Amino acid sequence: MIFIKSASEINKIRASCLIVGELLDALEERIVAGASTLDLDAFAWEFIVSRGGQPAFKGYTIPGLGPFPGTLCTSLNSGIVHGIPAADAILQEGDIIGIDVGVHKDGFYGDAARTYAVGKVSPEAEKLMQVTRQALELGIAAARAGNRVSDISHAVGSYVGEMGYFVADDLTGHGIGRNLHEEPQIPNSGAAGRGPRLKPGMTLAIEPMVNIGTNRVKEKGWEFFAADDSLSAHYEHTILVTESQPEILTLVEGAKI
Ligand code: MG
Image (cartoon, rainbow, N blue to C red; front, side, top):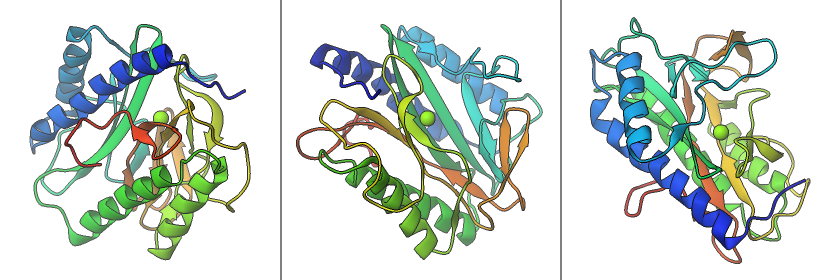
């Protein structure tokens, strides 16, 4: 079932989401050539814990895989999601890196992701990031009370397709709250007008994952890559469905989506 959150639950989700948003902003100046993804991970752990939160992904398990070791998911270039931070993963000028982070505090979760450029990146990488970010904005705009879940999917997927890119197969957004992942699943493509109706008080993580060359993915343990090794980008926000416009809970006031 899809949980409708009370005002006090929403405030707790908001607090977790604020830590996520501030952390993603604080990482901007740390995404530089020469930094390792493990350095970024250590910074993120300290940032979250010092604000009274717990990293939500660290220790997360799914059947067949050991506990996820990172505070962050760090997915470089053709990495789509769930990249594992490592000392020997050193950022190079021209890379792009998707960073996904979840925070748990007072029993509730927040979750967001952003793709960063390391120094100056190619026009292709720039365009991919722009399109994926725009796909997220369109998905959020569709998350209005009275719409259905697949209206979000359709808004994301149709735009990505029009721009000549591909949404990654089988990876979806999700409800979030007392659980990191709860109903509904939110695919990034499909026909509009299907699935449960959105209601005020639902909290959703909307997260387009977009590849340049193919929708197919390949998996290596936790990590997902574009099957053709083309570049991939990922943006995500946790939002609250309201009576009017959705509220973006992981967006720090004044920051850009
Ligand atoms: Mg998520």
